[in-house]
Image (cartoon, rainbow, N blue to C red; front, top):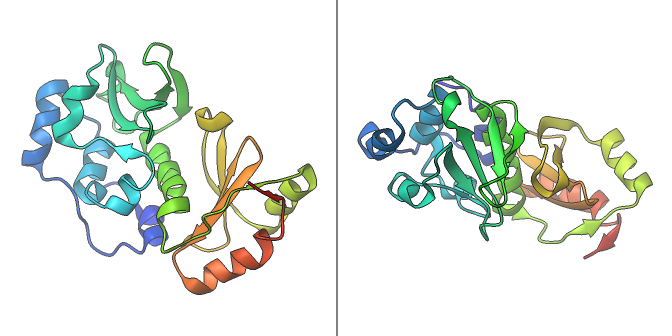
Length: 210
């Protein structure tokens, strides 16, 4: 089974809640072979709303036929359908294939090196909205404030290359996240009251509230 421990710690997940092999047969019937990481994620975490449906959406098995594409298996969509993410059909035999993003389903750009990286980065992005204690406020930062973030908080090690001009994630605990978009916009959340208070004490004083 793929190691999703980073996501589990972030959302305090203790038990799997995913789709059965029978439920996933719909997808197999359309695409044939599916990547191991893809199947593992759907089996272990696919039905957890806070990770997969809070902001953007993991496509559930019975809806895959609505996202039919000649060259890509589309499995994730932005909340207003501004973009989708997919796996190229030539990569479906790979265990942990790269992921591509498209705003028009015609031009596709390389988003993450692996599917594992994508699921983890998306979990951090969803966490900004879906953890127990979200900030619910966006801030626009100056250059020196961006440097403050990078010096005082650990980079989570996962990111988006293309979506929103690039998105990176910071935080000093397993269950917190600072979401930093390339547009210099920041928001944050944590899954414990204490960790959120630490974030809020510092970050609410930075930048301009949007």
